[in-house]
Amino acid sequence: MFRKVVRQSKFRHVFGQPVKNDQCYEDIRVSRVTWDSTFCAVNPKFLAVIVEASGGGAFLVLPLSKTGRIDKAYPTVCGHTGPVLDIDWCPHNDEVIASGSEDCTVMVWQIPEHGLTSPLTEPVVVLEGHTKRVGIITWHPTARNVLLSAGCDNVVLIWNVGTAEELYRLDSLHPDLIYNISWNRNGSLFCSACKDKSVRIIDPRRGTLVAEREKAHEGARPMRAIFLADGKVFTTGFSRMSERQLALWDPENFGEPMALQELDSSNGALLPFYDPDTNVVYVCGKGDSSIRYFEITDESPYIHFLNTFTSKEPQRGMGSMPKRGLEVSKCEIARFYKLHERKCEPIVMTVPRKSDLFQDDLYPDTAGPEAALEAEEWVSGRDANPILISLREAYVPSKQRDLKVNRRNVLSDSRPASAPGSTRPGASTSAASTNIAAPSGGGLSGAGVRALPRAARVYCACPNHSGPSLGLGPLPDGFGEGGSEPTPSGSPHVPP
Image 1 (cartoon, rainbow, N blue to C red):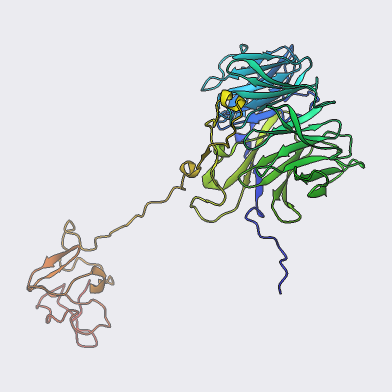
Image 2: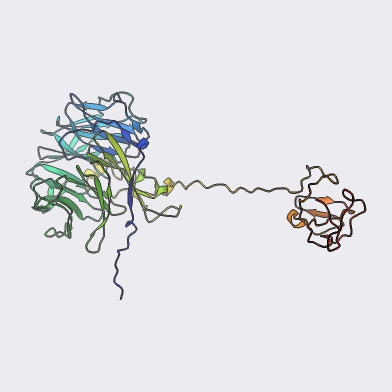
């Protein structure tokens, strides 16, 4: 019996690579607000970064193609009167983004198709309902125009953006500050991490607590919780000894974690990013200079460490590109936008593959931009999984070089026949090299070879060859300059 030493996984060799300097976004003044947000949001069309702004809050929206140095006068989205704390792109419209701010409001913005040409100060919708700063913004994954916001007033509000009305107010489920909120796959539930060290699973339409785990992580520092595709919950936090931890929980049995791993003793909050198509979790620490990634499986120990991407500079924030915005032909399975103090640097995660074909195992059908439900349908109690799309159409095969055939015509009609005695001594012409066909009808014919008259005789010029090459008889008298000299074997010699 052989013991399996190395676990088989197609993501075992995933590696991260930063792009070249000319593909970064330079001279961006990233926000210095002390809030554990990603400060960055990205979709297949735009990159949004929360930036420093005097006299209010602002964030920058750049088309993905606008790389290089960003002018200080570049227009921003600047309608908030307080610093912006969180932003999130709508999954069903790549030109709609929502923002939450210290001014206690949530604003929804429509970005022009080709980006901003002047500062944007007028939002499409202003949602007012919080009494303290709004630090969490997240869209519903499958229902159109449904937006969730959470503030430092410990209240969770769910809005219908299309009508600007408040659908649900959950103000009694969290006794302390809410660190983060994550919807499940079909948007029927969400999980939250709270400062009271509890992880809760909540049904927003009923306003009830489905499951709760107290002291998921015993440390006092911020923790995070996200839903996985199969309904399990992945959390990051700190131990009692301030060591950073990862844990995997089954909501059906919240008593003990399925897996618990300790990472290190750094003090930056861990931000998890989850890919439901590959079951890979990427963990980025605020202030770290590395991205760790893990594969979640159904077999113990459930959380399998894959690798670490390390760079020199620490990260202020991080944005993650949706799957439909990746370059499929380069086997890219994730792309992150790392915020430095003065720039944004894309980092590409790639699975090394030799084949140029579309990789079905790396790119199963993924969530598309089409909403599965309208807001009214979701409110009425319906649930639906995301509408999936295939990435095969986004695959662009590598450019193949055309086959070039160079046919060299040895005996061309356009070349004048050589006069007797005009050839260079020592040159040779082989009958085999001219592709001459066998005699037919008294003449010689072949591809690219003109027919020779019946009286013509073809001889080999090789001094070691005896006799005429086609056996058509001796040379006529007086052929060549001064006649021909016999070779040692007796066969006539033809000067080339």
